[in-house]
Length: 157
Image 1 (cartoon, one colour):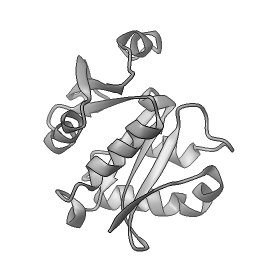
Image 2 (cartoon, helix red, strand yellow; image 1 turned 135 degrees about the vertical axis):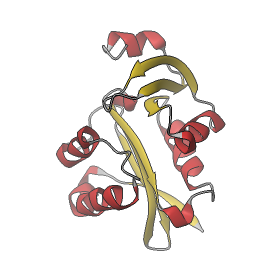
Image 3 (spheres, helix red, strand yellow; image 1 turned 90 degrees about the horizontal axis):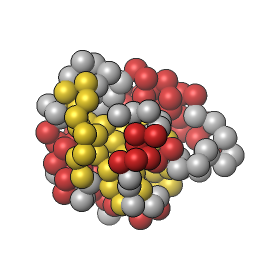
Image 4 (cartoon, helix red, strand yellow; image 1 turned 60 degrees about the horizontal axis):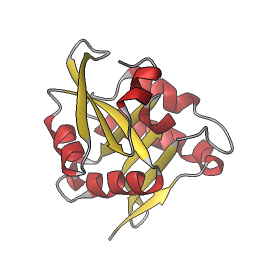
């Protein structure tokens, strides 16, 4: 049975190395250096507004995690262990995020079909196309009570 467990700031210091290593090993080289640096530097008790981090656990085994910084305006990514893909782990993590945060934003490279399928399955809406940090065409997506204006005002348009 997979459990979704929020990672509170007090626990982050202990689990951060595990999350960074998990991202490197199972992120299929799609997690940017900027995202890894963001996670490495995340601090605060409490986290900054709109920041949410949660792990998917099978017993005590980490099988995935998701994070949103400033609702995804600063950073957003999800990593699921290959053995647990197509078992609704990503869906459970994203549903929990949408339940906890009133809105989320993310950017997904157009060639990242599994992540796009996950976002669309959970009701996120593609609203803009940009060139991502790796030079690839990238969709900007929003979910929940999102606003294109908030995204634009933040300077991500």
